[in-house]
Picture 1 (spheres, one colour):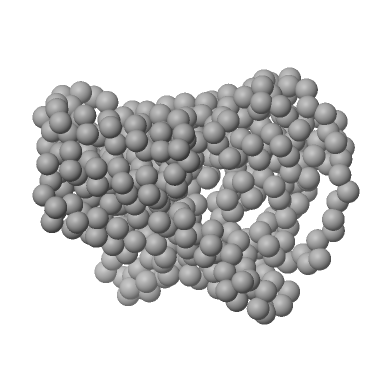
Picture 2 (spheres, rainbow, N blue to C red):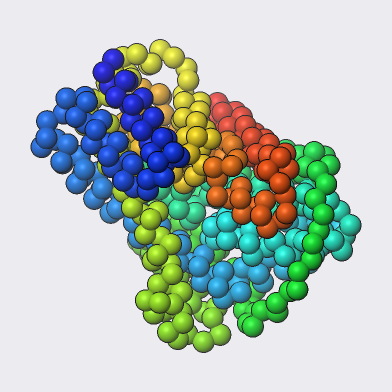
Length: 440
């Protein structure tokens, strides 16, 4: 019983520390882990080793992966490549299908670019096209925001899903493949939500003076830095399937090397460096774009490391045995990580923190929850991602980016963003549950 009480106290401290006391999530997670260790009676040496091993092991797995993913997104954003992709997607799908165009463009852009940044990039384009097509600005905004959110929480190389996959030791290629499938299917209900419900919200369009981009990189180069790493990682996962017996092929060592997440994303960074008109200090210096990538990635990497410490502390405390004894007969499975992530998302606002914290808590409990098999680890990552969308409201930075840039008030933001993320999250977990029942 002491383990459950200690875990509840730790979770309460995490939420209150982040939301009310405004403490940085890294320190909240670190302190929660240490306090949990003392409450459960762990000796000092075991607590210290849990801190060191938990941080070091998770950093060894995904520290570089997170940084390279952030670097690709930063270069894509600052070079104008993200805008090129957005503009071409609009032309390809057509202005008459503006809701679908904005949703799919957001869906693609949020894989390498943070959802907040991608929304800022696309907002002026969305506003202009909505005005020209004479359609509801709230409806197109909902479509774009939900497209951005879907890949932000379920498709690597976005940092949150990468961190969760690393903590749960899930195959990254499998997470990408199933993440793309489930997130895209989840958007079907979101599309109808955008055109049938969100579109009824009246938000006036106030046009601002647009600024022409100084440089427009080629579309194929802009896409390469996103597509190539994903293809390489997924290809390695396909080669690694035991049923296919492809590991004996002569080309396998090459695929295994190029498809390892660190190398694949490093190749993506190299391809992204082809986008700037001139490769100079503005790009590669400590104060340039790569320097910005370090500053953006550092907090995420530290939070992920603290999540690793929390998970290590839980594992070393013996809570997994307690959970096994008390919950092994219950068929809660994937709904436990989903509901835990949803609670953390709703209470503290950050999807990334919800993903990392939930993965850290769930990791030692996977056998008890019946989720230790390779495929179910993938589904667990996606269930946590689905939970981390439910719901976006006033304590979420993305909520305020959306409302402030579009001119919505809080009530309208709740009608468009909060309700929309509820639709996305519940649809996703339903699909995840059904697919897991069919596949296992």
